[in-house]
Length: 104
Length: 301
Image (cartoon, rainbow over all chains, first blue to last red):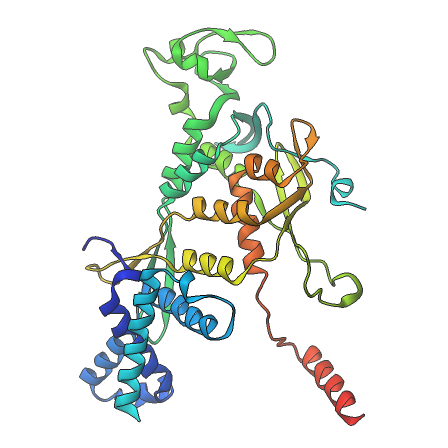
């Protein structure tokens, strides 16, 4: 077991898992992808690994996505965002840019 | 009619002691025992919540994820009970008649029992320096601590007054129900100022903040203690409460609530406040048809 890692400050992990979430959200329906990979164990394992975004990261990424939304639409001022949140938002933006550049 | 008038009893925030009557079964027999505790202070609750060490284990695989919440509930309850207990009633040691055991007994001093009789030290009955608190079964201690946490949001009324959603309301009411000292308290109202986006951000950040432990078969999510921050949010947003008393008098101001409200009640009230902000789409066929009918009627005019 490793020491507990605060997810909010693991910016590399946040970027990686945000990219995984974007890819998953934009991909084929999970069941169809699973059927397509079913005959190839390596591909199936890779699929499972790619899909497995740990709950810890899902929780913080959900917060960042909500925060990103309210910063654009509501009266939440950027000054209210903490440094950790800001760096997380930047990781999210990098993941989105990478996703968009590879897909479109 | 106010909530205070609706309540058959008012919830006392500063009782001399908290009485927890328990009905327990053992070897085919039923017994009634009673634990008397001092009222928990905020620090007691903070320590209890931290000792729970909540963690979420991820089971299954990516296709069918499932989660298991792991709590150190027994250890946390045992620690809280040991700090709070003053005396217990309805227990007996071998070869003796029934005893009431109090905190003074553990120091070996005979004392006046709650029923007026002189109670001898049970420590003598079991030899040496045995502490009567260690003799109480863990299940009884857990049940006594569970009784302190019996507070939850009350069920919502069928419909709001006049059926319209109040916009720009000056306050948001959260109603809790609780049980304590063997009595039920069905309407404990907390009046909050409407949360700002900034307050909601702090609440969401609190819920999302966590630690991850890797290296096991599956990752483990550790949820840090949240009670101190939740009580701070409560203190910032509370306007007043109804259904509670402080030494027999209703709480007069928000400061009274800030200073004297039970921290566990604060937690449940804040969670109900922010949890109640969600809006859901109606999934029932009946309401969907109703909405469709309304929409059609309006557009056809």
